[in-house]
Length: 144
Picture 1 (cartoon, one colour):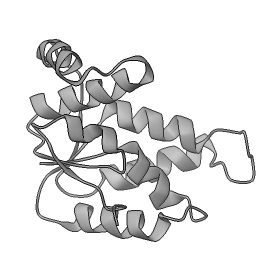
Picture 2 (cartoon, rainbow, N blue to C red; picture 1 turned 30 degrees about the horizontal axis):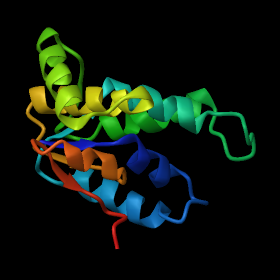
Picture 3 (cartoon, one colour; picture 1 turned 120 degrees about the vertical axis):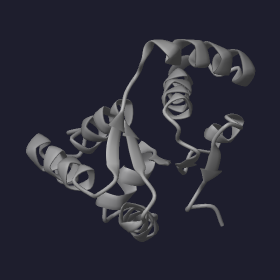
Picture 4 (tube, rainbow, N blue to C red; picture 1 turned 135 degrees about the vertical axis):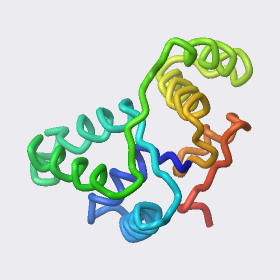
């Protein structure tokens, strides 16, 4: 199963970003692939929060637009939402100890734990910090 990070989703919809085309093509390829695709609930909520941020209203989507975009991605065959479970906390605690992640980076640990405990084997992200989670094969489509 392939997991997708927030930065891929954001770049896929933000036409003004330098990585827009790469993210858009990567996401389209993943969603049209035969392999199952997973979005953590955290990634979904983070995408909606960030893409609707009104710090630059000319670039923000409305909440309705953001939700419609997410629903479109989720309607692809083999796509599912994965969530926290009781067992994720054990994995989360172990990954915190192993990676040394703190502060805002704790959310990445949480996403990694959910992915690992739900059978995600590959995680697509532009965030190099995920490379610390060796139980996931990391694919960075933005790497040169």
